[in-house]
Image 1 (spheres, rainbow, N blue to C red):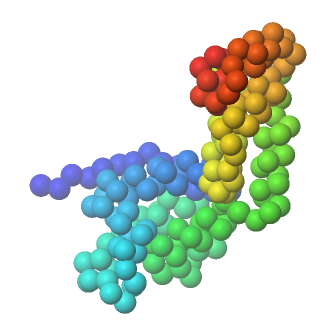
Image 2 (image 1 turned 90 degrees about the vertical axis):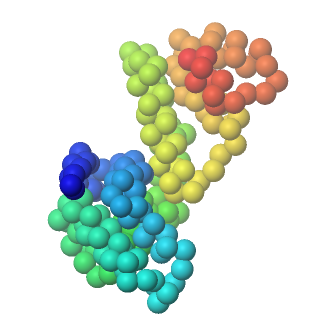
Length: 180
């Protein structure tokens, strides 16, 4: 008896947070007969694939295509393997060029919590920016991230910020999250 699994993943479009969509899509592929192995080329060159691996790759390719908005699918019609498609989607949706990195870093450096905003909303926005930077392979020292988060707090948090900074010699992002 075969059971059909339905996954609730919105179609990938230009407004989708690609880094999160990517994680969910990989999970869907993993839950569907281990099709996620195709994204890694089964650990070998395509010429060495077994007929079963070729079949899995084509199934993975089709499954990914089903979760693409037509605008994005139109740009990916030439990709013939799931790996080629995956790489094309990364180039379309999460450009790692210098301009994109600069724009994302500017978002991080200019992030400022408004007095009326909730701390949880602010932390969520900070984490979103960080996830996008990680997917662009931008790395920061953990202490620098903790300091950036503290600096992004409004003036009403000045005493909190001073207490955190004066009470220790080192700082981690996790400690700032926990204190907030």
